[in-house]
Length: 230
Ligand code: G3P
Ligand code: MG
Image 1 (spheres, helix red, strand yellow):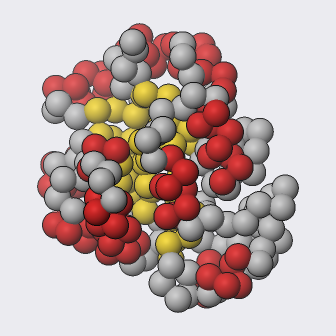
Image 2 (cartoon, protein in one colour):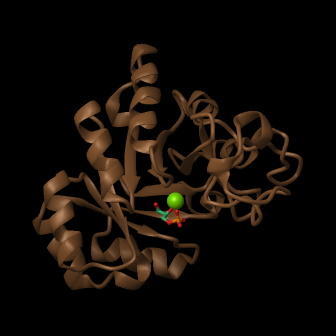
């Protein structure tokens, strides 16, 4: 079996409302073994699954996620009548079916994700079933000492000196990079560091095959239903 990772980016978000239970269920039903989601904190400290810092693109609400209580956020329509999910709800859905890449977006998510993961471990889940990633090194620095077994990933759209330094400092399991940064030399460099390289967002088969041939370890795709099992 191929170890190449097909990661359902915000669920099966190409056809279904991104970061909703519907999109995650569709990805799981298509056979995805990895889900990716983004988290922010509500005003009352709950971890909610939504990509943007603001509500207007993906829901019928307005303003910043962090300025709304969970009760307020739950009244919103996140597409096709779906609600904004709690992180726990997605983790419960994925349990025994897929691993989950939790991308820490909002401030304070490092500590909050560490507590949610602690609950999952007390229910018998293992650290390897998760990947905690962020563009924001600070949140990973908070999470890492609290949950040292959980693999980490740095997300970036460019690779520069500070990126390599952060990867080293955090001893990340993978580098999750935008496809615009990837060439064969970079793949070789990451392999020499013994880290994984995951690329976002890849919806095109030709591009996926090219990346695979170069030795990339996996891709984030909005259409897991097209790519799972290849
Ligand atoms: O983590 C990979 C990818 O999700 C990063 O970009 O903006 O889709 O969260 P974004
Ligand atoms: Mg993301």
